[in-house]
Image 1: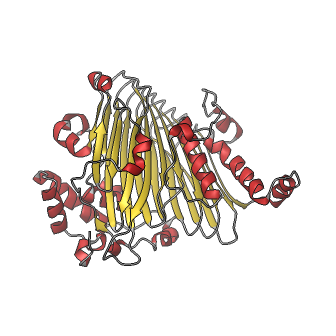
Image 2 (image 1 turned 180 degrees about the vertical axis):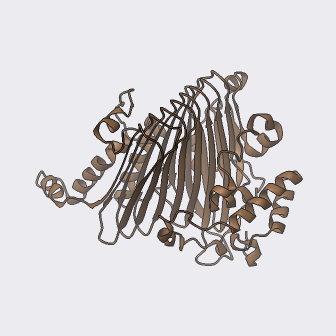
Image 3 (image 1 turned 45 degrees about the vertical axis):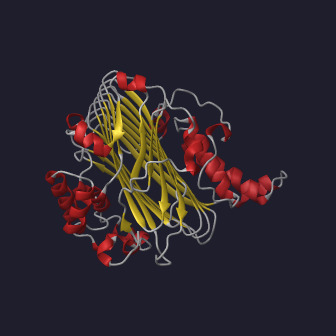
Length: 481
């Protein structure tokens, strides 16, 4: 898409822009009103609401919205050859593929469909499965909750809807792949996952880029991938959500995710941020039912001039809930990372346990990291702790390893692997663990590989024990009891 005027970019959006988009998508008048309301919310919200974090909004100064146009579906529904090896030839898998702003493939395994599972694009879901998503779509994460969530609600053209009926336990992962190919466009995806009572599902999300240089675009042109994911986890249900992001430096990543977990349910978030120019991530696990459990594991490896603005929140709203966040980042060159997180335990959430740990390692004098964990406790009889640290690599460890015949690079790589291991080992998916390890190793040696190889070519990892309880976290550390 050629940029010819400010009104065609994200810096010049108006209700007329949304009318054109809505007409292009053949939407109802009510959907258009929701988009216009979201745009109004976007313009009326600050970049950062919390006074604790306002001084870090400079992380987004490199995001040039006046060089990015809203992406529109192109009508091309073919899977690009560069990611075909990631999908394979199996026609019976359950997989979705998004290219720029277009859902080019959404397939559900026939047997799963017969058992009641629904896996489709969000546009189709709004028309054909409104009864299944009406109680959750836009209700778990609202436009007024965050500025860029509002922008997504105004402009989304793609995304998936996954519905897992009561009692269905799916052993194979549901996969979603996104590829950004076009320079100068913003791709906006909106996802909703609903896991009903006593169901179990694993959702694996991958985001990559392979930019084709556009014509008639400014030299500083950028691309943008925006994702909003809402997840509803019913009573005694389990959702494993894993995500790998390895975008190019001229592709920015804005992501908002929030879950609502009901009685005795469990959600496991696993996130690997490897690529992207600017990454802004907002994750909130709301524990709404007694006995609900949430675990969030995040790994960051930054280099060059990358920026990572990562928020991980736990919100306990019911008694006897358990939440934990384990975030680790490694930075070199001129990269920058801010880990921000908040544990909130509401008045009615007695006997809850919560743990938040954010730690970063710096490999270069020009790299910078901040860790800002926090607590808001409004009741008694809880266990809650938070920790944060930023440190340089230990030169004594480097010296020891080099004295054992390792090169300086090999020694530092081994220290990094060890530093990240407490987070990586808790990732439930072996595929995600192997993928993150592969991308980190390639980046360490200076090969910015954007796409991983076939799954069978990823490094072999030992099986981790099935018991992934977080008891040890709370027995070793607590701040309030």
